[in-house]
Amino acid sequence: MNIETEQEFIDRRPQRLCKMCGKCCRVVTSSVSYEDMQKRALEGDQEAIDFLELFEPFESVEAAKAVDREIVENIPDYENRTFYTCRFLKGNLCSRYENRLNVCKRFPSSPWAVYPPGCGYEGWLFVEREKIMKYVRGLKEEQLKYKMMLKTNPELKEKLEKLISTIDENIKIFAEYGSEKW
Ligand code: SF4
Ligand code: SF4
Image 1 (cartoon, rainbow, N blue to C red):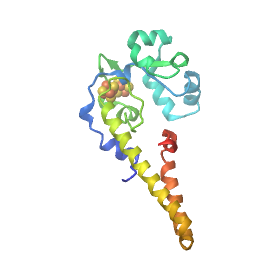
Image 2 (cartoon, protein in one colour):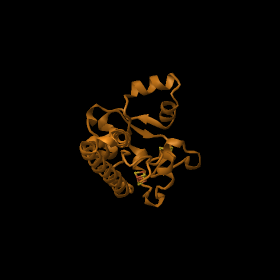
Image 3 (cartoon, rainbow, N blue to C red):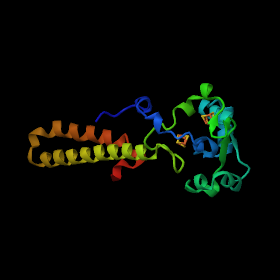
Image 4 (cartoon, rainbow, N blue to C red):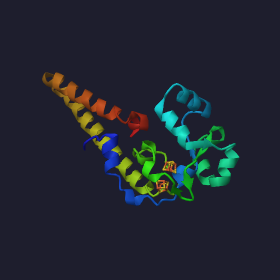
């Protein structure tokens, strides 16, 4: 299996799966607080500038829930989050589709993208995650085999240790998604 770049993943994403429901634009949250987002934007962070160009915060979590309770309650620790809605969403459609920002064009950009319940990509992303987990489990089996060989083939020590270390590096690529435990 080739470990693909984010762009390669985006390029093969089946866009026909999008139901054009607008959920990913109607109620969203960010990993950083609104205050931090504003601070980052003032410091010139382009991702924060883009985010604030598109999204305005709801006055409260309750206000976001009134628009889509399911999306809000699907987010861990939602009581302590800021939720936003896009200024450019009209009905279910984007009013600046031709000029939408990269952040919009790129969603979902990874098998681990956070998507709203009912997103058309849900099943496909699940399969993509499973493929990667299967690949990592295969790597771990291979690594175990080399570790066993190491015990009985000291003359291959250098070669086997290099293989083991290369596999470690490949597993670590997915560490932020929990690959150590797969
Ligand atoms: S600009 Fe369009 S695509 Fe981007 S978040 Fe807003 S409505 Fe969605
Ligand atoms: S939530 Fe999913 S299906 Fe709905 S518009 Fe966004 S990407 Fe498309």
